Length: 275
Image (cartoon, rainbow, N blue to C red; front, side, top):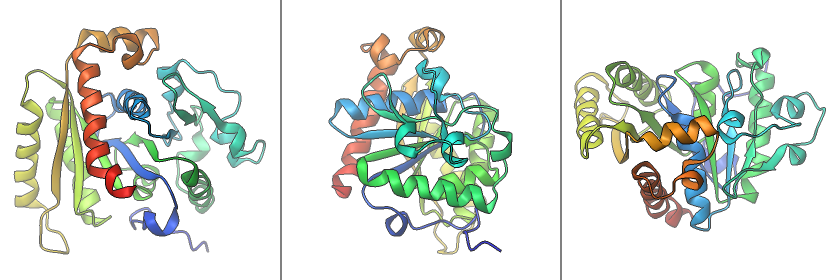
């Protein structure tokens, strides 16, 4: 038997890592722009002088390499199987930050085994001292692999769109984080917002549902913290199709400016205290 923690048991990031602030970027539903947010947020934080690494924690359906137009020779698969060192898997991305890519189709890593847990934890512990921020670009949903990835982070940023299916799945994911990981708060960003203020209203509505239906051990409802909206913007689709970072392709467009604002809010609220 392994003594690795259950995916439903949150680890104490302060106890398991030294150095980087670890933020899990996750979502209830796929296709909401989670990896797009992770990559461009990393570029925006790098511009602010932070040393940033994005780790592709979607071990089964990784696509960070596609978003960044990278063709890695070494992935997490090679590190986990002992074919390559972790050092060789850390590569530079456009935008000036570092990435560790997972490689897609890693079926053997779509289940959380004790070996996967230990390897993943070792990777995080090895990387944390070298960076100010590690963004974990997790898979979508509430599988045990996703929940374990999220448990390694001190902060959770959940990405949702205004679509009802996205919000329903976001609620399900937040509920699990509250009840299984005992999270006291989750940060939220609404992507593809149609109008200014949409995201704040959506966050408020979800908060009300949580207060009605989700009981926590502390007796206080999990607090949703609205971190910002990313407006629906045709420049986003153009950048994704070109496999370019929005912040490099069209830095002055509304969505890019919104991501820069998100980076500023994260720096002010999370990194200042960590420094």
